[in-house]
Length: 257
Image: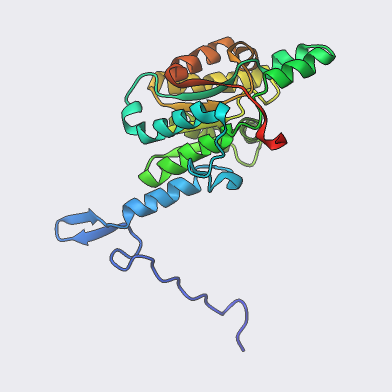
C-alpha cells in the first residue's frame, strides 16, 4: 500500500529544454551562455527587489498627473530613460523632498500647524508610485534594483542584528543595500531616530557615496529637517548624490480630492 513517505514527487520539467535550466550549454571547448540566462537574471532581480506588491504594476503611464506634479513625473521618467548614462555621473541620484518638512510643521502650535500643513503639503503626490515606476522600468532591462520603505527596512535591520538564530542575516542585508546597482529608499526619515539608526544610515549611504552608486529617495522632510532625522553627514552625502535631480514637492494631497 502506498504511503505519503514512499510516494515520490514527480520531477518538475525544466523550463528551458536547451540547457535544462543550467543557464549554460556544454560544448566541446567548455560552456556557452544559454539564451534563457538573461531572462532568468531579470526574474531573480525582480524577486529580490523588495518592491511592495501594491506598487508592482506602477508605471509612468498610469501615474495620475496633476499640475503640481508634472516636474516630478518628468524628472523620474527622464531618470529611468537615461539611467545608463546618468549611472556614470558622480551625482547620479534622484530625490523628492518637501519644501517645508514634517518635523518643522509638527513643531508649530495650534492653528499655525494646520495652516502650514495645508500650505506646504507634500503627502499624496505620488512619490512612491514614481519611484516604483523607475524600478519597474529598469528591472526588465537587467538593472539590479532594491526598493525599501524607511520604517520597514529599519525594523528589519534591527531584528536581523539581534536575531541569534541568523547571525549572518544583518551583514548580508547591509551588504545588499550598500552594493546593489540602484537603491531606492522611500519615506526616508520616517523611522524613529536613535544613535543606532543614524549609524546604519551613515554606513549604507556613505558606502554608496564612496563607490559612486546611485540612490533615489523620497521624503516628507525638507533638506534641513531631513538632516535632523538622518544626521548631517548622511544628508550631505545624499545631497551630493541627488542634487542635479532634486525635486521639491508641494501641493494638494490627491488622496483627499
